[in-house]
Amino acid sequence: MHELGITRNIVSIVTEKAGGEPVRRVTIAIGKLSAVLPEAIRFCFDIVSQGTVVEGADLEILEIPGTAECRTCGTHFELKQLYDRCPCGSVDITRLTGEELLVKHMVTA
Amino acid sequence: MCTTCGCSDSANPRVTNLQAGHTDKTIHSHSDHSHSHNAHDHGHHHHEHELDTQHDHQKGHETTVNLEQAILAKNDRLAERNRGWFLGRNIVALNLVSSPGSGKTTLLERTIHDLKDAMPISVIEGDQETLFDAERIQKAGCPVVQINTGAGCHLEAEMLARGLETLQPPSNSLVLIENVGNLVCPALFDLGEQAKVVVLSVTEGEDKPLKYPHMFQHASVMILNKIDLLPHLTFNVATCLEFAHRVNPNLQVFQVSATTGKGLQHWYDWVTAQINASNRQGVR
Image 1: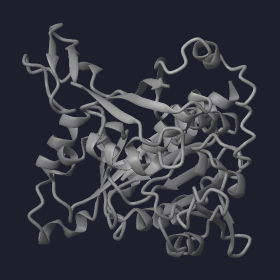
Image 2: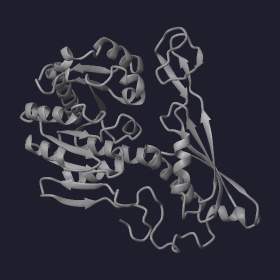
Image 3: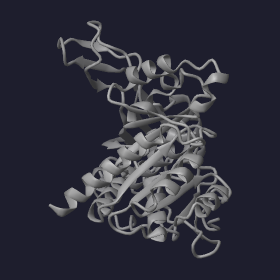
Image 4: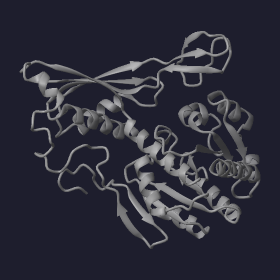
């Protein structure tokens, strides 16, 4: 359940930046290859935000698909699993997206 | 427990120094919170911070604030600080990760027994509860600090920093960190170690590397443990290694039995090479 600790980090970052203003919406980005479950974050968010300026805020989660570039043939392709190979068969790839864990923005009122 | 805000319940991480008797020290620094306990003294009352300028003219309107901040930035910063701390002291720190029961503690006991005359070794033990593992390590003859994470399922960089403060490992030494038994969470939390060493035992499935790819991808070394039991099992070593290398082509693998000692020399050679490389860097 590392999502609990991760959600604490999210609420902490937002609370700090909100400077006492109530927060209406929080948008985060979670890569599909990041080993973090959006549903678990959502579950923890309501609990962790209780008693903070973030309490009651909507949580918007952008799920970022995994993509990679092959260092052998140069192809860009979708990475469904962390260990997918390039369609050309090469395992020598650079992962481009899919591992994000970011607080993107917040809406205060 | 923090009686003011209740933010850290009985799940507080505790650090126990086994050399100094069983004195518990509670980590309670509110590291993942940014508040102080004077709820009305946050320094945000003075309407001087940047957001207010936007708000004064927008009463009742929503304001979008771009943050673009890494969620684990704080842990990563603290991990870098630990890394610098190790580097400055020529210490090689290895983060041992695995599922519970893979034989990490037995591997440590054996490693300490066989290497302690060649290099100073100390250990940080991470478990949710109990001092059992630390007591085993102490019996093996090496300084050890136990971190109990309570509800936490992994060690974080700040816990390690506190543990190191208590442990005070000597310069030019080896620090072995036994993470909480868990193949998921410890992969996400950098501690500032030089390398992650994942221990997999042959009593588990050979498909573990594909089931838990993050851990095997973040590790530099995989120790395949309990190979003395292979005759009694259907575990396919070749399949396991193929899966492991599919996830991480650069993963270095040592097949060992921490109980019988088989194959351990290759692991010791690797550890010794890390120490020698670190010493060479220190001399430069």
